[in-house]
Image 1 (cartoon, one colour):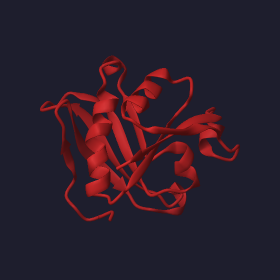
Image 2 (tube, one colour):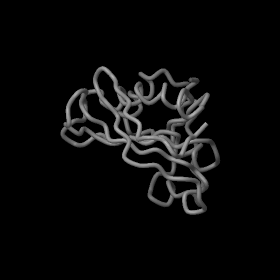
Image 3 (spheres, one colour):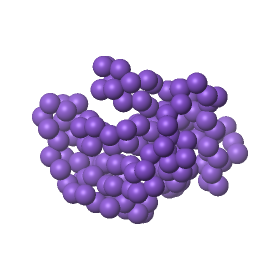
Image 4 (cartoon, one colour):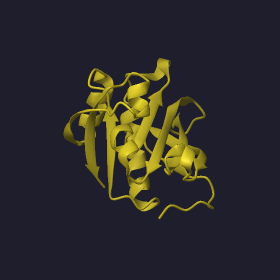
Length: 151
């Protein structure tokens, strides 16, 4: 169950920590999707390495965009931080936000993300064309690899 009125989450891992920045509530402007946004820090430090967010629920938008989105800052790429951040976020998605499964997507030509999603053990549901009216298509991402994760 998604809880709006809680203290900000601090999710600690062995390699990275996730500190909650803010939450959004479902509204027309976000296609009725609640989200929780985190900054990724190297474990036990204030050294920021990127951002990650969890989108709660499932609808047409999330099937193509995924339940998790991440971005590792340029100087920190190639060190497995996206993988580690997802490993920290998966149990929180299950235990705090009540999710039983997640979809994470990437563009087929994004080899680092593909490797991350495969390393996380996702089941590739397929390479799908994004509908032309979807915001991903409109920003130049017409095809997505869609991975499923059972929590």
